[in-house]
Length: 271
Image (tube, rainbow, N blue to C red; front, top):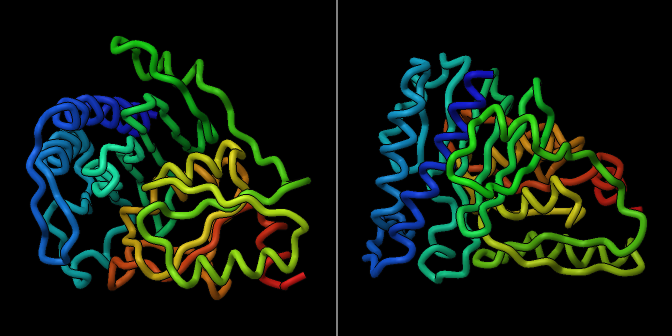
């Protein structure tokens, strides 16, 4: 439980660092891959890495040094972090960015924390707690208080309108094809647009039923949200139906689809 407690407090405190910069006149730089980065990304990354270092586990972070696969392939357990997921949303000041912290064991996320600093909503999951969410209404809450008072998230199958989560900044051809396929299967669908891992949070608390993406994410973008939806009773698979795994030779993800297992089967079978 110490791993989860530390991840929770780290995400909240990193969120405070991020919000101070969010409410200022910050500078946006462009990385080699043409994605934006700000001081908030870097300061939050440094803070989280410092907090997690007490466990002496390797850390893979979007903003940190990434070890070669020749070294990583021997890692059984490690942290996978995106200190500010949704930097484009941060820059556009729409509030849809998150702090993502996941623990991976044997290529599977076994713990996940996603914090949305603007709305102060915290989502987390582990074997001990299941998937839960909590509104952070005080800066003085302990991890024990949060865990004991958080709302348990359980899967609720879609019984009416199918709500599909779509990326605000990265609508791709795969997602468009998925939407069109769903139109042929379901009587009514609704498109729900959101940025970063907010979509995983919406999926975990049943605000949406389905979320799919093409080949435009990295492992740190999905790991924490993946953990939360898994413990909420949902599934995430590659867009060709294979298990979704982490610590691959390349840390870029293939396309994926996430939702209730029966729903995924219905869509994959096309009926």
